[in-house]
Image 1 (cartoon, rainbow, N blue to C red):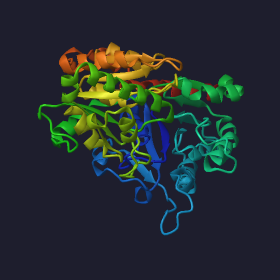
Image 2: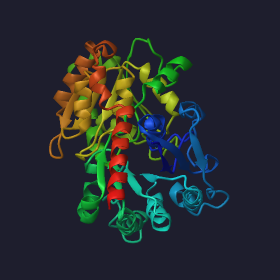
Image 3: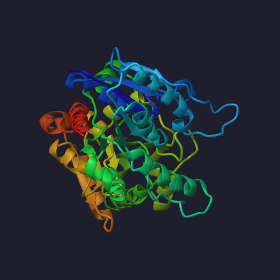
Image 4: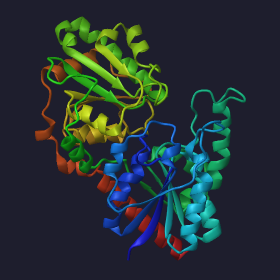
Length: 430
């Protein structure tokens, strides 16, 4: 029997934010496992971020997508978060489905965190079981929360009020990894006892890369085959990842001191690493590269480029750089992009990150591990970089596809469908 599930995601294609891909990838494979998805999302005409129209070509054919009414930010921007602006529209759309008997489950993927209460609201009014998927921790101690009346201070305290209300009565709690929900479960032990819990990474789909290769779009941040070794990092930098970036830059400095010829060949490109997605002047890497004395080896394109353009750059690079953070739970979704791009991976990750085994099991490249107390030394980074440039691995021929299948979007969806089946069964039993 096929069941119907509403995947609630503040952003969806053509949104270029990484959070938009969770619902897109799940919706591709859910019918295979007995769940028919409908995506409920905000109005793309009201997105503040630059859209990527090519992403709509990656949406599964025939998928029902409901673009809920969303308050605009122009001419007067009262609030920017899409979850706040689309909340009422999403609630109305979901209510209509529930009243028509078209919903067997509601799963809200966060962020936007402000959409999370929708599940419990629908459950209280219509009895529809619900779950919340954590792509990031909700209540998290980020910089600025101790400054009274600041935006960070207010957001932190609001999260502390909304999260326990939203997760109460949840039939299902999922996350990218256990660490993403561990704090919430400690603060809400009843949820840990009563809800079905499941964890699955973002994963990635080979179909995305088939489309990108067919498009034959050329990179614009570098020119392949120009005699340089192009190493690219694509994606945001987390606050807890800045020390990892500094350790990498220190390794670059050591490489130039020990092997100036190798360093002169190496070009490291950072894209989408700025202070905001659309600020072309929001440099965060270049100032640190200048302080480390390696600005001549680094380029930064601070604002985000399109997902298709990103994949085009990855598959035509010489190697892909993945930098993690000092947070044990952090599993960069860019790992999946890197492995499926079939380019050598150079990664610096926490030793407890599940991404370490992903890369090693797939034979996709080199991983230097770190802990909260100890980062790779400049000497270790320099040695690994030199080996990367001198003897890059051929990933397409050596990567274990079977090993990587365990981290694919299809396997992620299978785990979700299994958890949904258990959550619905548990709910019915109760």
